[in-house]
Amino acid sequence: MHIGFLVSAVETERPKNTTIRLAMQASNLGHTVWLIGLGDVTRTTGGSLLARAHGAPPRTYRDSGVFLEALRGRSAIIQTIAVDQLDVLMLRSNPADDARNQPWAQMMGIMFGRLAAEKGVLVLNNPDGLSHAMNKVYLESFPEEVRPRTLITRDRQAIKQFAKQEAAPIILKPLSGYGGQNVFIVQPGEQANINQMVEAISRDGYVIAQEYLPEAAHGDVRLFVLDGQPLCVKGHYAAFQRIRPEDDIRNNVRAGGRIEKAEITAAMLHTVDLMRPRLEADGMFLVGVDFAGSKVLEINVFSPGGLGSAKQVEGVSFTKTVITRMAKRLANHRT
Image (cartoon, rainbow, N blue to C red; front, side, top):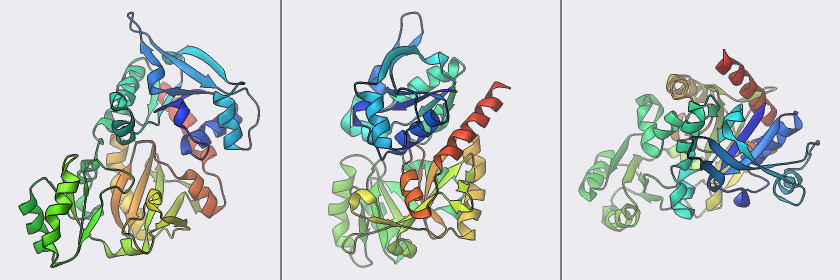
């Protein structure tokens, strides 16, 4: 296969990123691999889609840092390619990150993905499906059984009423946030603090008010779902548990959380079963589903990360299975 990985910027990729791990595995399996930044794509006056792409000299790589250096160092193969010559284009940019770091690029991954798909390239995840998942409202399109009770609003009074009805802790967080930023917990009887919290969150848009799931106190679990099925290799699920610091309500690793081995329960697997029809309909090839107990806190469809963490706690690699399944997807795409 000729595989392109479309990232926010080649320069900002890190060795531990899931994108680099997948690209290295694909290269080691003998596929032609290109890393492409959003700023490196051109649509010509004739309608062609070209990209300044980075490739690594073909050899077997054992270390992702060495592989990344080969992609963008002195030995890198840098050339302009026609995107329609790719077999697969994997979209691995994150609009939430781009909105902050390069606002001009926020929608470009989806746009270039659509253009490539029109030329017959297999694009993963499906760009039309991704367009429905630009923020956390996407979770509300899944069965009510799988998700916490949620209110999305900018109305402080509506949030206060929600908190009163819950008569239990609630979580407040931004609709389009990432990395655990501006996440607050409101205890019963603490409504006086809601005004300040809503003011801080709503500067950037809508506020999510959500029931607090007690299981989250023990950490949340990220489980990778591949082609609608939990990603599992040799009886090991591609998953890990994130444990919050003692002085923080956020489990996110960026916020100082740590990872441990996760227990994947029958209830979690049942939840994935309930989610599968929508994930398949939206063309979601690889996603990260974040659980608290059997409820889904978030669905990560843009460049979900953590396959390295899953390998660390489970002792097996999951990247080969992803690339192998990609090849099967391509075969079906061509029939």
